[in-house]
Length: 98
Image (cartoon, rainbow, N blue to C red; front, side, top):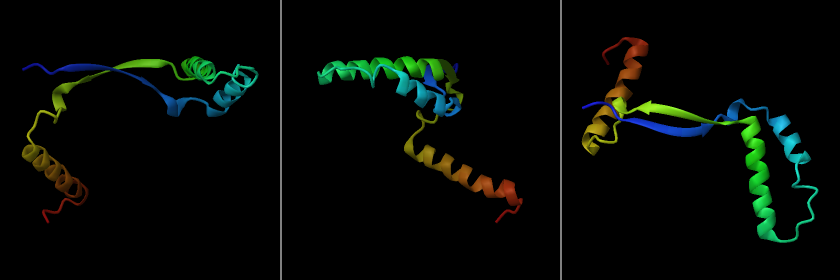
């Protein structure tokens, strides 16, 4: 059975310059607007934050292969696999059977 490939979208938020992002938010139309309707301000907020996020952390597309997908395993098999990995880590570190 061939592996299932899944596509997903993400934004790399940890790599963006947060100070510049904050400055752009402060310079946006959110603080100078005279909108009194809450729905209109919520729409403006959504548009401005999305626009600024797209500049600082553009949307990227990734793909992942389902070779190591454990979602199709039974609960018992998943628990056995977790136990195996948990016991394998100390063995790699120490080399001792115990």
